[in-house]
Image (cartoon, rainbow over all chains, first blue to last red; front, top):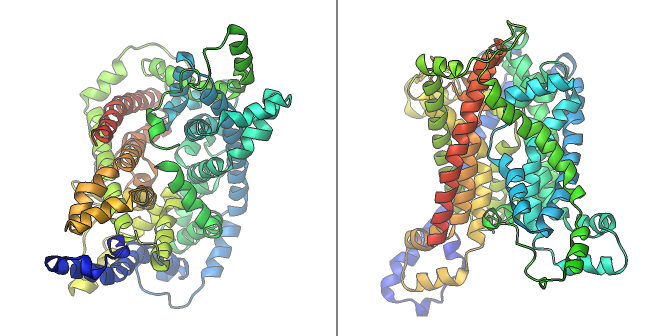
Length: 295
Length: 314
């Protein structure tokens, strides 16, 4: 552990402290072993189960266990879920709700946050509190469906986008308002002196500064929406397919019952877009999240 | 975006600004026009607050898919769900689940953060790997563990291999312990996020303070218990509050592993809502949705207040 990272010159240590330092060094040598074992036990076992089962034949995968497949047929299984499992349509369904939701949440959220961060007063404090309350308060999912029916939006991508936007604006406003408060007023003033109106000030001065906080918010919101099945079950109700909805349907339907090789092949394909994004941008993503949440 | 922002109220008219003359103030206000706020406010009002408000009304009606008219029935739904025990059962299951998830997720996250704290290549790789469950769909995670925890599944197979005897534990079929198992799965999915936040918290601690403690002969455990853990308070607040209140709204993991079983012992409020909604019993679903909303609201205030007070003491 990092305790050993800044060694004290040996002559500064009283002899009585020697055992403690030896213990520390012992722990330092043990750490990589423990880290590898923990990773293997906690992640290796479930991940191996997914990959090995997804590579088995139907008969072999009937009772999923940790044995390796007799012959690896991952690609055959993947091809089967992509074509027979309707994954392509579900993928575009997911994109159709995720992309507009994320775009709206970021733009509307940043605009609102700018005003909330810069204007003062009790009224703004109340509006801010209401806007961020959605972070902890659960949406009223049943009456959302009722409302969408009355608006004629039930089962439509528009309705789903509205629901996601209403839910996750709270997260964006919380993150971005905090960030804008740390941006000096002088940056805006300079543009204003040059004659820029609020629209230009916001889009040319403020919005570009928000890149780091908006990328963090994007990651979190894409994670939530891409993987959401609960609200999609209520709102879309089978009229539009998304990847998690499709997984839910095929995993609970008779067609796939006990077809673990196909379920896990589906899980792998479905996780790939986020997994690839994460692997490519992991350094940025991790520093974005850790830099953002706690200082 | 830092935790302290949770505490901050929007400043009362920027401290850097002189008590301006009315004209100057008016100019300043038009610099940040209210219409920038309007679109977000409209969306949140229509898609979040309106359903929440109407939830209070529809919970008092007999709305269902079997009738064309909706009539007012007062608190009948609530008393019916209370009298047959469903309400308290689902509420108890949900709160137990949320508390267990919050405890496990924070415990695992903190231990992983301490384990992988030092910046070297191995630890960086491990951190990335532990973040993979976070980006996976919770539903998919549920199916993975459903397969892993079958009586003749992978976990029992591994335990049997290690112990040398055949193991046949029904991890997901126990009316007492399965709730703990599903909470562990939920915590497993999110522990990578808690770990990252704890790592960020640990990084902010001044190395000189720790060095001074070490020179005074403090052991690793002493410095952790007396210095580092107390200084992690903001990270604890964030992690604990989001895990607790977020898993009150849990659904995916439990639906994919037990669907609320065995014998309803893992039936969270959201599972109940989904099931009754599917059966066309909209009034019952709405009533439970209201129960969930009120419970989370009542929990959020004292939980966040207590955790912040805990930060202040330090």
